[in-house]
Image: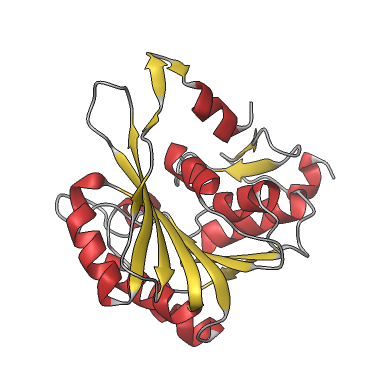
Length: 248
């Protein structure tokens, strides 16, 4: 299948993912995936025979990467913005992953109404990090929706994740450390017990700017804090672990 079969729209580009010859369509005017999505795809575990759903999938980056990095049976991406749904569906088609990945238009707030309860083994999410709409000139823009809690709150994500997961199912997310206390309180409110945490540092001598969490629906209260992940060993040069996650 060539680029012409995907019908790239004006302003779109086709980027390599360095995994299994996979490619992804991106539109810089909307929102391109970042390192957080890639790190989440390296942190999440989807076992053979398991079904996973990604809440707020954007251009489908996490289901596409997980289809290459894990043994999961099937992946679903839920996305509220129709333009992103279209982009993600065309990326899935380009990579010939239609039998393994579904991209569905819908709202996280009502996800369990759409898919049913206790139906997924794994839920992943790279949710909006910023609270509310303070300072936003256009709250309905694609980038605002991706970055700010405009369409849903973290509590919406936690509530619907708990409903979607089977008992003992796992939730993987990436977020910002400054909200960690709030995240853990909200997660435990919905019986999503944090079991594994990894902090991500841009440089070894800087504060962490991302946190990766694995939670288990109905799990016991015991969490492992893993060794930190350092992104750069010097400006512009990734650490070996980052190169491994990216697939170089």
